[in-house]
Image 1 (cartoon, helix red, strand yellow):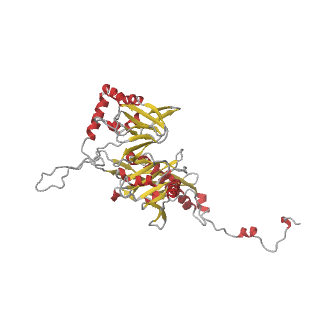
Image 2: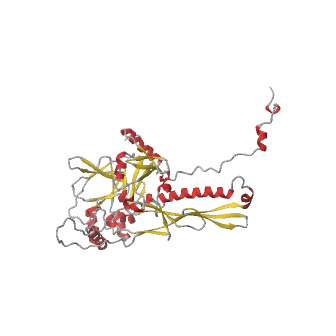
Image 3: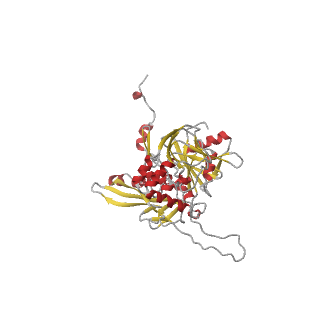
Amino acid sequence: MSSPAAEQFSSLQTRAARLLATTTKTPPQMQSISSRNLLRKLPWLTVSSGTYRVNRRLQIKVGRGRVSFVQEGTDVRIVPETLTELAALRGYTDVDVLTRLAGMFTVRQVTPGEVLAAEGSPIREVFVVAHGRVERLATGEYGTVDHLGVITDGDQVGDEAVGVEDPTWSATLRCATSGTIMVLNWDALGGLLETEEGLRAHLDDFARRRALPQNRRGEAEIALSAGHLGEALLPGSFVDYELGPREYELSLTQTVLQVHTRVADLYNDPMNQVEEQLRLTVEEIRETQEHELLHNPDFGLLHNTSYDQRISTRTGPPTPDDLDDLLSMRRSTDAFFAHPKAITAFLRECNRRGLAVDAAVQDDGSKALSWRGVPVYPLGKIGLTDHNTTSIIAMRRGEEKQGVVGLQPAELPDQVQPGLNVRFMGITDQAILRYLVSAYYSVAPLVPDAVGLLEHVEIGRTDS
C-alpha cells in the first residue's frame, strides 16, 4: 500500500490551486452584539444644552427609600446614615443622633408563618427587613384575606405612625420566609425624643407637612369647586412647583481607537481596516451605553426607579399575578423589559396555569411576547444577582405621556450616528492614527410612575 506522499494524481489538487485563488471573506464578526432593545425602543429627545431639567409640581408626600445594613457573621447592624431613607427621617442630618437611633434597633430572627403584627392592633414597633420576605394581609369587605404586597430587604413599616394619635396596623404582617428583622420599640424612641429637641422638631414638621392638603399622588392640592349652583364663592388657588427640580446631565462613553498607518495603507483591500475597526468600536460603545442606561448609579433605571414603584414577587417566580400588579401601578404601560431567563420563568408559570401568551407584531416586523397587550422585550443586560434573581421593568414611554425618554445631544461635530461622533486626533511619532470615539446619552422618567420594577424575581424554581 502506497503512502500519501507517494500517491499520484491526474489533476491539480485544491490545496495547490488555492495558492492562485482569492478568498471570499466576511467582515469581522462580534459575538457580544445584542438586540439592544432598550436603545431601539426608547423615544430619544434632543438636548441642545447638555442638561435636561425635569420640572414637576410640588410634591408634599415624602418618598421612602431602603435602609442598608452591615453584616459580620450573625451580627447585623443598620448603617446610621441610611435611616434617612425612612420617610419620617428624610432630610435629617444629625449623624450622632442617627447613630444612637440605629443602635436602638434590636435583631429578631423570624420563621415562616410568624405574625409580626395583627391588623387593627396598636403600632408599638417599627420593623426594618434586613433579610427575608414579609407579607401584608388585610381583611376584605366580604371577610376574605387580601394580599396587599410584600416587604423585602431594606424595606420598613411602622414609621407611618409618626404624628398619629393611637395608630393601628392597617394590615397583618406575616413572614413568608425565614429572615432577619430589625425592630425599634416606640417607647425607646420616645425616650430619645425627650433629650433630642432637633429630632423631635423634625418629626413634628414631618407630621405637619403630611397633614397639608394633597391629592392621591401626594402633590400639593389645587383648591377647586365642583357641582355648585348659582353664584357660589369660588376658591382661589395656584399650582406650586418643586424648587429643586432634577437635572440630567448627558453622560458619555469614550475610547481612543488606534490604527497603525502601515495597516491603514497596505491592508485595505477588500475591506477598509479603519472603517471596520470603527464599526466594531461603535458596536461596543452602544452595548456599554445600554448597560449604563440600566446600571449607572446616577441615572440608570435600576437604581433610580422610585421605591414607591417597586414591588416584589408574591412567591418568588414571576407569575401572571405579579405582572398584573406591576401593570396596575401606572397608566398606559406600553413595554416590559426582562432578562430572557425571567421571560422563560414567566412562561413556565403561564404553562402551569394553562394560560396562553400572545405575540405582538412590532413596527419593524419582528415579534415579541406580550402580556395584556403589552410587549415583553428581552433585555439580558438587566443581569442576574448572586442569588439567581433578577428584575422586570415596566414603563410608559414618551414625553407627551409623561413617560421615560432617552436623552441625546443635538448635531455633534464629526457625528457619524445620533449622539455619537468620531474625531481624528492626528498621527503619533510611532505612525499610529488616533481617533476619539464618543457617545453622549442619558435617560429620564418624567414622573415617578413612568417606570416600575418587579424585584426579587426567581428564575430557577420549578415549583410554586
